[in-house]
Length: 546
Image (tube, rainbow, N blue to C red):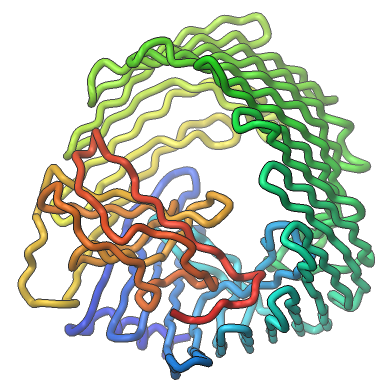
């Protein structure tokens, strides 16, 4: 570990072809304070983190390319050293969300039709905050070998093998016989216990239907974290249908088992449905659901309806009704919100809340300028967890936020956070501290400008993706933990923009889906975010290097 930290630090302080971006801060809700830095140096890239959270914690990652070919059969190999995330996904998984957080060393080889990976190290409990990316290892040695391969245009396979004192070996496949159908299956052993799953999905322009059935032994798990793992069990299903563009209908049935080290496993079952519609200036959303933790808490029911409409170009109204009913509590909430856009910089909100017969009026406001943004508002929060901690399931709290932009793209963020018990905690961090010697030695970027390029990197499910390098003109920035990136520019003129995969520090495999080739500077109050979409390939066969 010491050798790794020395190597990471040497990369950071290098004085040629170097790019460094630093974030530092802390907050009360996690009782955490730290600093993290993402860097590139020549063809190396990575990050370092150090902080205090129940003791001093450190973290770091370094990606070392071994070889790369650009021939017809292009391939790429690299070393992964330090803290990283390894896919544990199977073709039968919904959304492919299974992965390991680990610390150690691995080697990966990618071609256009295959991905192979060998890793050895320890399981890791990660701390991923805007200002501190660190982790604590659990003394459980782990060896992982992954292999995925695109056999034909319609057939792919995955192999997951791990050993941490118990053997996990699972094979899976996915077959797409037509444009609309995807069929998949998986089988093997996990932690020495049997596993089998089948899944089918039907996709059309206005319809998405998916169902799966999983059989797993009582001790089966893919050890996602050092302390718990979650697996689908029995029948799971979801459906989405849009008869017309303005109407969307959704339903899902979820059945899962959570294994917690040292405790009996917990099985949860939930059913939920929603309908949304838009027309005549109105947007209406309704939903209803039930959830049950088998053998612990009886059934919890929830219903909600919300309606919103723009009354004028500067006035928007929103109203909703929420009902929650469980053996532990019963709550009914009515909410009405009026939002008034006083100017391009100032927005004021007025809220009315009725909770179990008690009326509350509140208000809030947002001020946005090029240098500073302020917000203050009182909101209604819903937190079933608060009941178990002695609080109320539905409560109100004031929140405040300040964002101060400084020269060269640095930003100071101060905000209050409402924790699950209803307590307001203070947090803040300084981000965007950059050093770069890539390109010409002179720096022609504005120290401060009223124009900027703002954007966000999302995956195909709409979730923000961190660590993606975006080159705007001669400057390169990294997307933050929410997928957001930001850069001051001199004027409104179009500047070239591209996604630079070799400078990105996102540890999971990904491929670019879409991105504009140019971006235009705008004032902050008139900003239209640039959208970059990537496909996370942690559960898919790599489509090759670019």
